[in-house]
Amino acid sequence: MKPVPLSLLAVVFSLALGACSSMDALNPFASSGPKVKPADLAAIQPTSELVVLWKESVGSAGKYTLSPVVVGDSVYAAGSDGTVARFDAGRPVWRINVGQPISGGVGSDGKLVVVGTPKGEVLGFDAATGRETWKARVSSEVLAAPAVAEGLAIVRSGDSRIFGFDAVDGKRRWVYQRGTPALSLRSNVGVLAAGNVTLAGFPGGKLVAMANSNGAAVWEVTVALPKGATELERVADVTSSPAVSGTTVCAAAFQGRAACFDSKTGNTLWSRDMSSSAGVDIDNRYVYVTDDKGWVHALDRSSGASIWKQDKLANRGLTRPLAIGGRVVVADYQGTVHLLRQEDGAFAARATTDGSAVRAELVRLGAGFLVQTANGGLYALDAR
Image (cartoon, rainbow, N blue to C red; front, side, top):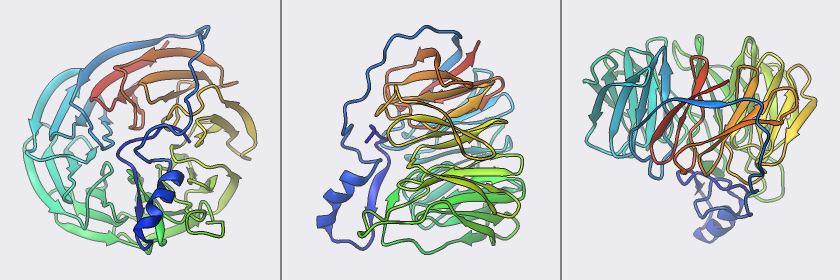
């Protein structure tokens, strides 16, 4: 197993406490550190350069995974101590403290900024000033970044309920909930707003598209079917965000598959057996997957056929891949950022941050991308 985020732990709903140690052995998010020695980083012959455009800090994420959000030239980010800040092209605009810990954030549409707390509070702020505009509550802790779109703040609670709140006043419009297996992983997976629907993965290997108008399911697909004789073996949860490009949506499941679907109908385009807790990304040619060994795969977008794999980063706690500018970026548990060539997966460049793990997904930022480390460092990078 790879080294993994501290904020993601196994949740046992109906098993006895004696099963917890077994679950820790299975769980890719267990907090006890690497189970297998991470691959050493060999020297590379760079063919590109990763340039730091600017860097800032918002404070440690603590045991949580806190993700920045980019809207135009503005970056909104949070720290677990309650800090929320806005930066425009690297320039600080405002910084506030909400007076309580933050466990889920950040979501924004450029007008509203939303974060969540361990007590299930959802806090909305004016994006221009940082002034609090409303508060709401969900049914359990918020571990994921909310999404803000279509006049809604869409928030996932730790019990896998999805809430739609009015972006203006925070009043609840709808809630989506479904049954969960007896055993599942507690993760920081959030939701993805895509047009007039919101996409969310669930325990048991399901991916659901919900209508933003009322929260009703538009379609539901199976990313992975639980397999095995025991509840531990049958854990097959979607613990990462899906990726959307055109009419294609792709997702991956832990102990399951990577698969792509038609985003309008939910019809399956293809699927591949592959365990991934980190997730996938997609460009005009390939689907990229970080698997649970720490290997990065490129699969043909139309068929799922293997194109290449990069296995020199095994067990380094890699992030979800980010496809950008004809290349692929991942970051690891030591805060090292790796740039891979699109055509063959070879290393093109490497950069270091502050030495702490990168648990949050990398985020597109103009022509470059944004990295938030566990220690709260914000790095805007560009590949040249």
